[in-house]
Amino acid sequence: MTGPVAIIAAGELFGGAERHVLGLGAFLRGAGLDPRVILFHDRELAARCRDGGLPVDVLPATSALDPAGPRRLGALCADLGVRLVHVHGYKAAANAALAPGRFAMVSTLHGQGEPDWRRPREFLRDRLYRNLEVQACRRRRAAVCFVTEDLRRRHGRRYGALPLFTVPNGIAPLEPEDYPQRPPDLPPDRLHAVMVGRLTPVKGIDLALAALAAAPPEVPWHLDVIGDGKLRDALEAQARELGVGDRVTFHGFRRDVYAVLAHSDLLVMSSHHEGLPYTLLEAMSLGLPTLASDVGGLAEVLRHEETGLLVPVGDVAGLAAALARLGRDAELRRRLGRNAALRQRRDYTLQAMGEGYLAAYRASAGTLR
Image 1 (tube, helix red, strand yellow):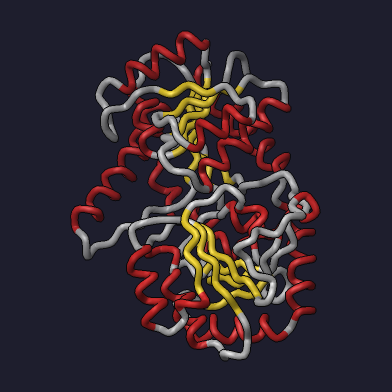
Image 2: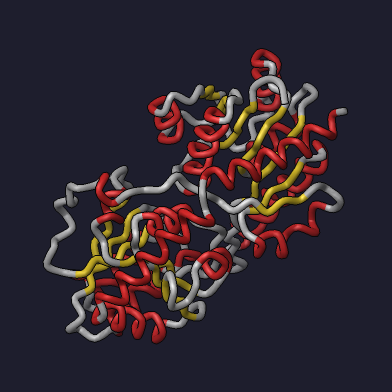
């Protein structure tokens, strides 16, 4: 591979895909390559790239699919001498597919859409964006990477004969002692269960609230919800209606998530579906047990009774029972957390992820010969 590798993402929000960009950029730089991050929004991801010394370019975009975007992207890639682009999301894929110039393309599918047929406009928009991403990959003969086998089984056939890879997310290990200062809004007189992510229906936060209300009141769980989104008002109202408003804190977006995880007692992921969440790997690395839905990447990564507890999707009674059990059994929490930290360091490392992408890069670059 010669020339810079352009990692392209929207950069509008900050979540797992954005943490992926930062980690991958750091790996590529350490491997002696020349990563360049190209974004369409100058927000949190752009700021963190600069903080971490990753070269970042922000292309102006007047809309979700600015007609001038591909031309600008092609000109920038030509100026930088880019021969391979790694795209994340439909917007990056569509712009790269239509950009002038000859370069190889790799695309990562981090998760599946969150369509809601009860909202026809959102449903059709989600389907449009998914189809755009698939057609973009076909146009550039991209190598397509899935972060879980579940996603590959669900969506791989849509890409036809393109080269497909499963490359699980990975991180550099996190050490609890690197976060000695307990956040002041995590009172030490109770057990803290934390949820991290966008406040959208797929995350199942309403299920966690119902489970908290159904759990025995003598188990002192406090639910800390980190993230923002369109459901925040409704979820806050639900917590009040269930009588657990004083046992739930909606923190909104915050930058000290690792400190919160390091000083919490449990990660809760009652999602309806997940790819391979970075929050899960980070919590595991910090020695935190997880209570999760038995679905998607959560089911692939977690081992029931060994690194966490899994319950069927939507099972409020099961979540409540698991909360009660974990609340009463500190040794169980410690054992699950220790095993989780070992599994992250063995199976979900930044090195393993990076090597997986290097293989995809080589496969994609071969299409240019």
